[in-house]
Image (cartoon, rainbow over all chains, first blue to last red; front, side):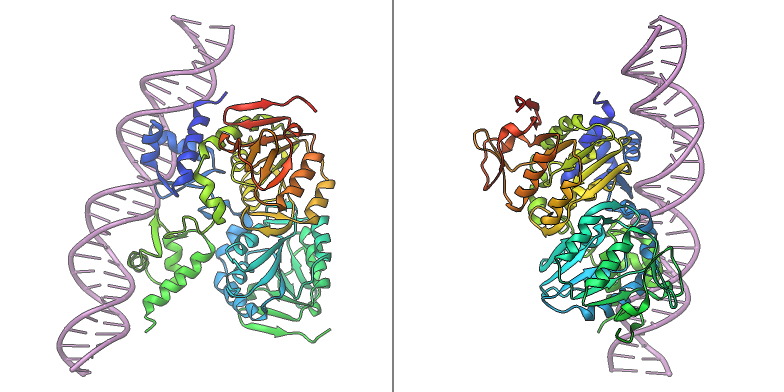
Length: 243
Length: 243
DNA sequence: CAATATTTGTGACAATTATCACAAAGAGTC
DNA sequence: GACTCTTTGTGATAATTGTCACAAATATTG
């Protein structure tokens, strides 16, 4: 049952497990088949390999492995998001516990955590968690649950219960839409429970969005504006009257 | 002294810190210069960037990505591990729920889940979860908790409690040592609670290890051999008498 | 301000990679 | 063996990427 094709895939993965990339030419030579066949093998296993230039790379080197929604949005407003996070990072203090919402925006915040700060970061999405692992002094707490590909995040009761045992100093929330009257909204309903519970538990919550989100209304409402200590955009903090 | 050139290099590095690759076209647009200039910038900083196909990639991120321990072990016995997983994959049946332990070994099992199988996979490590996201028909359940860099996994009470609400058909366990008399052991104590609870809940448990693990004894004991339906190595399944 | 160096953009061309259609080879069935 | 179906290889062609020389623009210096 191990067809010739599967055995080649295994050989490929094997060869690639050491190296970072493998040129099509070498792969063909290694497997003793034509380059065309290798192309087809790779194309048939988009979960495992991708092409980059003339090279085969493990899927994941490209952004092709990111959930579609995230990957698409990744570029747009990247500069604005980064700017917003630079301002948001001012609210991170050493030895405290912060919550980092899902989405692409707050990925930049992770990069901006000072290397020498020993903090605890609570998150519930894969992309944020992944980035946090590059910060040696950050203790990471992950809220588990069922995976939602669209936002690369998890949700479930146990994740919510975990929150009860945490003391969160500062929560950084993201949103897909900010309507001045209605408040903050997102696209995926499963995020709502997490966001709301975090807001209710955290000592202070900040909404971090780029200006393109202002004025938009998305399906899932999760908070009125007055629960946030500030709304942080690329233009800086907009303070709200304390509640 | 911050020449225009250096400032572009910084911007480039910045943009690349998010994505893994950046297409020349996008880089040029982002920096507001011609593609030729970007080419020269990249060529002048061989320590920082490389070209791969039409894309810019960070130069030497061979191991900076994975937790050190995992990265180092990743190569050794890779072929054996993959072989073992090929045998293990025989125990995956459609529409069932499986548990996948942490470590590098079982990453290969993820790749071997048939694309058309709708299964639920329970895991508690980042590397396994990451790989699972490439399987569109797999529902992923993540056990959360505090992150342990050495094994890229999470542990905590809430994760254990999540297990109570799950029905696991087949559990695939990994181990760092298998002593015929003493049983299965691992390196990190925090894994023990998860492994033990999974074994007690799953309908059948299999231990998947390459032969190099046999005869070794590691600090954290988690199960005697007779709890496993089989021990799966690159040589195939070794059945145990049902308990 | 000129004179000189450095940086940048452009277009032409070479090299490489991607895609496709179709033929050849092999595997499985009766 | 004759039939089908699948897999693989080949060559032509399109699209993309890489390289280079040279002109234009910008910075630097005295």
